[in-house]
Length: 172
Image (cartoon, rainbow, N blue to C red; front, side, top):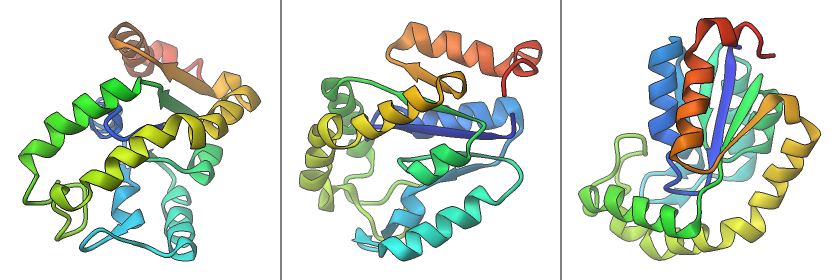
């Protein structure tokens, strides 16, 4: 298992999990926020995003966190952090407070959280109806290569499964 995609709503824990698994499995970690956003929270044009996603998925080994059908499709296994809106909002609030006037390390320069808050709430709120159905379809198409994590207990089980060398051999 050399290619893992971690997806979910904003604040679901994608980045945290990606770095934990990257360290445990000795895989490089990439975040899609760096290619989706440009300095000042300017959205990157879709064709450029698609090109940069292809560059990432063509690498031999990776963990990529973010929302992307192309990345899910290229992954050996993908993990969907299917948390509630409330959980996403609470986690984003805790995370974003520290970076209100500056940008998080995994973002391009000049992306202070205060500038994205209204849009972020909209993203979180609409995720269930706009993005989740496509992810669930991909899961139904590839149940043997997908993992859904809804709570801390499932997170612990998934983490153990993916970091246990004997179990890794059984995964695609």
